[in-house]
Length: 348
Image (cartoon, rainbow, N blue to C red; front, side, top):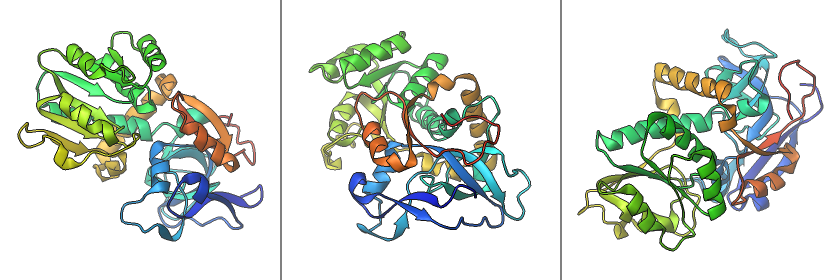
């Protein structure tokens, strides 16, 4: 790889990202093995899950056994291919997922986890093309399973988030009775502008639970799509109709709610976790269908994959601070300048 030593963001212990993450240089690029490709990363997102993985990894001690690099998604250019790789070639733009360690200038990834990027899709859109659209697909499958033909409202938290906006767009398209929760009145105004047919409620209002009940009507809330969790869980569960389901796919909130405090048994409620990290366990045919959906979305509605700001990889601390701003709209990106001009896309 041209351009000198490669950079990588690493941590050797769990904790606050600003305190445990550091930028290191690696003099020699790794070599791809059989069925693998070496990708020169150009753009990668800062997802909430990336930061959670720095703060806490289930089953790991605070001091990690070896240095770890955050990130699971991003866009880059194939630098070299290993034996038995026939579908990709050097110089080709690809989006990768799941590819642990994308907060680095280069990463080795299995060839079947690298998706060719169409010429008309920008580098920035390609960097966001997989995780959030695939999360949407997993949430919708879980939602259909939870509803089981029952009629009633679906409530989602953090509706202004990147995934929340994808859910809203899908709800409008499929006529899903979705109620959106946001933190502030300014966030509510923005969501009403983007999706005027969907009710939006700001949790800064003291009576927000009662507003949800009025919007849900007699059948009540059948499913909650929640990426906030924490202390808010009890309020959300209380809004569910008997037999309803809470689908948890993130933990943006503070505080905690003990499981025994929830009326799960006598109200026949279900709590289920959903994570895109289990997506790789789907069949090859199902994964191909999901990837086709993600590529189509990137091609035709790139505005749904909004970028909040871009920072150089070395400025990861500023990027993390921006990613955590409550009023942020879109996803923060970490970028690497192109070593040579490949003539495709541009890393703005």
